[in-house]
Image (cartoon, rainbow, N blue to C red; front, top):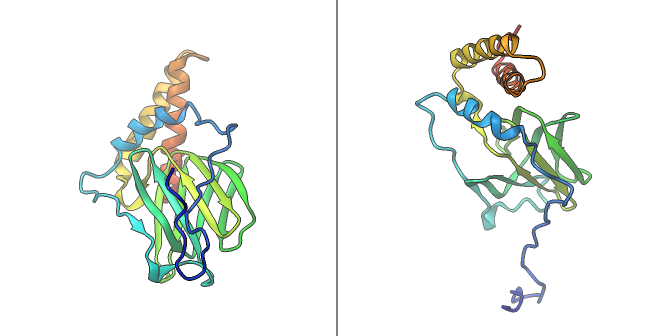
Length: 201
Protein backbone atom coordinates (compact mmCIF):
# COMPACT_ATOMS: atom_id res chain seq x y z
CA UNK A 1 0.00 0.00 0.00
CA UNK A 2 1.31 3.46 -0.87
CA UNK A 3 2.59 5.45 2.15
CA UNK A 4 0.53 8.42 3.45
CA UNK A 5 1.10 11.71 1.63
CA UNK A 6 2.53 14.23 4.06
CA UNK A 7 2.71 17.99 3.97
CA UNK A 8 6.27 19.09 3.29
CA UNK A 9 6.11 21.86 5.89
CA UNK A 10 4.65 20.19 8.96
CA UNK A 11 4.68 16.45 8.33
CA UNK A 12 0.95 15.96 8.90
CA UNK A 13 -1.01 13.33 7.03
CA UNK A 14 -3.06 15.21 4.41
CA UNK A 15 -5.12 12.32 3.06
CA UNK A 16 -8.88 12.77 3.26
CA UNK A 17 -10.60 9.87 5.00
CA UNK A 18 -14.22 9.52 3.86
CA UNK A 19 -16.66 8.35 6.49
CA UNK A 20 -18.61 5.30 5.24
CA UNK A 21 -22.38 5.21 5.43
CA UNK A 22 -23.60 3.40 8.53
CA UNK A 23 -24.54 -0.19 7.76
CA UNK A 24 -28.02 0.46 9.09
CA UNK A 25 -28.71 2.98 6.32
CA UNK A 26 -30.31 1.31 3.34
CA UNK A 27 -31.90 3.06 0.32
CA UNK A 28 -35.66 3.37 0.44
CA UNK A 29 -36.94 0.74 -2.05
CA UNK A 30 -39.65 3.15 -3.16
CA UNK A 31 -37.09 5.72 -4.32
CA UNK A 32 -36.23 3.96 -7.57
CA UNK A 33 -39.90 4.03 -8.53
CA UNK A 34 -39.81 7.82 -8.41
CA UNK A 35 -36.99 8.34 -10.87
CA UNK A 36 -38.75 7.73 -14.18
CA UNK A 37 -41.52 10.06 -13.08
CA UNK A 38 -38.99 12.74 -12.14
CA UNK A 39 -37.23 12.51 -15.48
CA UNK A 40 -40.52 12.88 -17.36
CA UNK A 41 -41.11 16.36 -15.96
CA UNK A 42 -37.69 17.83 -16.72
CA UNK A 43 -37.86 20.46 -19.43
CA UNK A 44 -36.20 19.43 -22.69
CA UNK A 45 -34.10 22.62 -22.58
CA UNK A 46 -32.53 21.72 -19.22
CA UNK A 47 -28.77 22.21 -19.15
CA UNK A 48 -26.44 19.54 -17.76
CA UNK A 49 -25.86 19.90 -14.04
CA UNK A 50 -22.72 21.89 -13.24
CA UNK A 51 -20.03 20.31 -11.08
CA UNK A 52 -18.62 22.36 -8.20
CA UNK A 53 -15.09 21.53 -7.05
CA UNK A 54 -12.88 22.68 -4.21
CA UNK A 55 -9.86 24.83 -4.99
CA UNK A 56 -6.83 25.74 -2.86
CA UNK A 57 -8.00 29.36 -2.80
CA UNK A 58 -11.54 28.45 -1.72
CA UNK A 59 -11.03 26.43 1.44
CA UNK A 60 -13.99 26.51 3.83
CA UNK A 61 -11.78 26.29 6.92
CA UNK A 62 -11.83 29.42 9.06
CA UNK A 63 -14.17 31.31 6.71
CA UNK A 64 -17.55 30.62 8.29
CA UNK A 65 -18.33 28.33 5.36
CA UNK A 66 -19.06 24.62 5.36
CA UNK A 67 -17.76 21.93 3.01
CA UNK A 68 -20.32 20.14 0.84
CA UNK A 69 -20.05 16.81 -0.95
CA UNK A 70 -23.16 16.13 -3.07
CA UNK A 71 -23.19 12.86 -4.98
CA UNK A 72 -25.53 11.03 -7.37
CA UNK A 73 -24.94 7.45 -8.54
CA UNK A 74 -23.76 8.70 -11.94
CA UNK A 75 -21.94 11.90 -10.98
CA UNK A 76 -20.55 14.17 -8.29
CA UNK A 77 -22.11 17.64 -8.24
CA UNK A 78 -20.19 19.11 -5.29
CA UNK A 79 -16.76 17.81 -4.36
CA UNK A 80 -15.45 19.35 -1.11
CA UNK A 81 -16.91 22.67 -2.23
CA UNK A 82 -17.23 25.58 0.24
CA UNK A 83 -20.81 26.89 0.64
CA UNK A 84 -22.59 29.06 3.19
CA UNK A 85 -25.32 26.55 4.08
CA UNK A 86 -27.61 23.80 2.81
CA UNK A 87 -31.35 23.59 3.53
CA UNK A 88 -32.19 19.89 3.60
CA UNK A 89 -35.65 18.27 3.21
CA UNK A 90 -35.30 15.85 6.10
CA UNK A 91 -37.85 13.08 6.52
CA UNK A 92 -38.60 14.46 10.00
CA UNK A 93 -38.68 18.07 8.81
CA UNK A 94 -36.66 20.62 6.86
CA UNK A 95 -33.49 21.93 8.50
CA UNK A 96 -30.49 24.09 7.59
CA UNK A 97 -26.88 22.95 7.89
CA UNK A 98 -24.25 25.65 8.44
CA UNK A 99 -20.60 25.70 9.52
CA UNK A 100 -20.04 24.04 12.91
CA UNK A 101 -23.42 22.27 12.79
CA UNK A 102 -23.68 19.34 15.20
CA UNK A 103 -23.14 15.93 13.55
CA UNK A 104 -26.42 14.49 12.30
CA UNK A 105 -27.60 11.70 9.99
CA UNK A 106 -30.94 12.20 8.25
CA UNK A 107 -32.98 10.39 5.65
CA UNK A 108 -34.32 12.79 3.04
CA UNK A 109 -37.87 12.95 1.76
CA UNK A 110 -38.85 14.09 -1.72
CA UNK A 111 -38.58 17.87 -1.76
CA UNK A 112 -36.51 20.97 -2.44
CA UNK A 113 -32.89 21.24 -1.33
CA UNK A 114 -31.34 24.72 -1.31
CA UNK A 115 -27.58 25.32 -1.49
CA UNK A 116 -26.65 28.83 -0.38
CA UNK A 117 -23.39 30.20 -1.73
CA UNK A 118 -21.01 32.72 -0.24
CA UNK A 119 -21.98 35.33 -2.85
CA UNK A 120 -25.66 35.15 -1.79
CA UNK A 121 -26.82 33.01 -4.73
CA UNK A 122 -29.27 30.22 -3.92
CA UNK A 123 -29.16 27.05 -6.00
CA UNK A 124 -32.28 24.88 -5.69
CA UNK A 125 -32.61 21.20 -6.53
CA UNK A 126 -35.50 18.78 -6.33
CA UNK A 127 -34.44 15.44 -4.85
CA UNK A 128 -36.66 12.34 -4.60
CA UNK A 129 -34.98 11.14 -1.40
CA UNK A 130 -31.54 10.18 -0.14
CA UNK A 131 -29.40 10.71 2.93
CA UNK A 132 -27.50 13.59 4.51
CA UNK A 133 -24.57 13.04 6.89
CA UNK A 134 -23.06 16.02 8.71
CA UNK A 135 -19.70 15.36 10.34
CA UNK A 136 -17.53 17.22 12.79
CA UNK A 137 -15.37 19.78 11.01
CA UNK A 138 -18.22 21.45 9.08
CA UNK A 139 -18.43 18.81 6.35
CA UNK A 140 -21.72 17.43 5.01
CA UNK A 141 -22.13 14.52 2.61
CA UNK A 142 -25.41 14.28 0.68
CA UNK A 143 -26.24 11.22 -1.42
CA UNK A 144 -29.35 11.12 -3.63
CA UNK A 145 -30.50 8.77 -6.40
CA UNK A 146 -31.26 11.77 -8.63
CA UNK A 147 -31.36 15.57 -8.54
CA UNK A 148 -32.94 18.10 -10.87
CA UNK A 149 -32.63 21.88 -10.85
CA UNK A 150 -36.04 23.22 -9.83
CA UNK A 151 -35.83 25.76 -12.67
CA UNK A 152 -35.66 22.79 -15.07
CA UNK A 153 -38.95 21.24 -13.94
CA UNK A 154 -41.90 21.70 -16.29
CA UNK A 155 -44.87 22.95 -14.19
CA UNK A 156 -47.44 21.82 -16.78
CA UNK A 157 -45.99 18.29 -16.83
CA UNK A 158 -45.92 18.15 -13.04
CA UNK A 159 -49.60 19.15 -12.82
CA UNK A 160 -50.63 16.70 -15.56
CA UNK A 161 -48.70 13.82 -13.98
CA UNK A 162 -50.17 14.62 -10.57
CA UNK A 163 -53.75 14.43 -11.87
CA UNK A 164 -53.01 11.24 -13.82
CA UNK A 165 -51.45 9.61 -10.74
CA UNK A 166 -54.47 10.56 -8.62
CA UNK A 167 -56.77 8.93 -11.15
CA UNK A 168 -54.69 5.75 -11.18
CA UNK A 169 -54.64 5.63 -7.39
CA UNK A 170 -58.41 6.06 -7.21
CA UNK A 171 -59.10 3.28 -9.73
CA UNK A 172 -56.50 0.79 -8.44
CA UNK A 173 -57.46 -2.07 -6.16
CA UNK A 174 -56.85 -1.18 -2.53
CA UNK A 175 -53.62 -2.68 -1.22
CA UNK A 176 -52.32 -3.62 -4.66
CA UNK A 177 -48.86 -2.86 -6.04
CA UNK A 178 -50.52 -0.64 -8.65
CA UNK A 179 -52.15 1.44 -5.91
CA UNK A 180 -48.85 1.75 -4.04
CA UNK A 181 -46.99 2.89 -7.15
CA UNK A 182 -49.69 5.41 -8.00
CA UNK A 183 -49.58 6.87 -4.49
CA UNK A 184 -45.81 7.25 -4.72
CA UNK A 185 -46.27 9.19 -7.96
CA UNK A 186 -48.96 11.31 -6.31
CA UNK A 187 -46.66 12.22 -3.43
CA UNK A 188 -43.61 12.89 -5.62
CA UNK A 189 -45.56 15.12 -8.02
CA UNK A 190 -47.17 16.89 -5.07
CA UNK A 191 -43.71 17.56 -3.62
CA UNK A 192 -42.48 18.85 -6.98
CA UNK A 193 -45.54 21.07 -7.26
CA UNK A 194 -44.85 22.45 -3.80
CA UNK A 195 -41.25 23.19 -4.77
CA UNK A 196 -42.55 25.06 -7.82
CA UNK A 197 -45.12 26.98 -5.80
CA UNK A 198 -48.07 25.23 -7.45
CA UNK A 199 -51.35 24.55 -5.68
CA UNK A 200 -51.77 20.76 -5.67
CA UNK A 201 -55.30 19.99 -4.41
